[in-house]
Amino acid sequence: MTDWKLHSKLYIDAYGEVPGAALHQVQIFNENPYEGPVCFISRQIKPTEARYVASNMKCICLVWTLEKLNNYLDGSVFKVITDCNSVKSLLNMKNPNRHMLRWKIAIQELELTNTPDNPAYVPENAKSQIPVEGINITDVGTELLENVRESYKKDKNCHILTSLLEKDCKDAALANSLDDVWKTSYNNGRFHLFDGILYHR
Image (cartoon, rainbow, N blue to C red; front, side, top):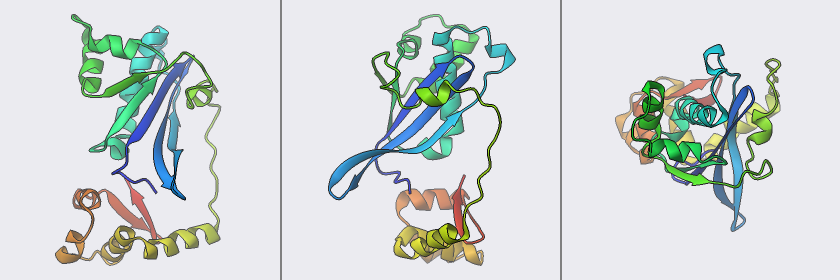
């Protein structure tokens, strides 16, 4: 499960017709740091975007990613990592056009880190360089879902949330016992319970 208190890394890339991104977090397992993925996203470009050069597509990719992953990134600390200087250059542009001004406003408060132009270095490159042919749907096994439900009992915040959402409980004292980040999301109506599984939107 994502821990919003931990620092995250957002890798972005745009290649050909598929902008993509990977959100990672570094968590501690057995006293060792481990960087692992939280999610991967990609999409095909719109017809109006087809004329943009690669550097502009990087900016489009970042802005789209920030909007798409807002529920993960809002209020958290994260670093943006890209293999292109165009995103940084955008911040220093004195007279951006209408589109670039919108992009600049969207990213001006981010911490940006440039990486070498090396496909092996940026983990979302493979994702962004494979055209999307369709949507695959995978059925999740009943045993896995039951294990997820059982795991909620071992986590304070998950256990409280399931108690609050199961019967639409309005126990203010119980809600206030949530950790701050969880409580904020709960008060904003971002948690939902369906078939005993918690969802955050």
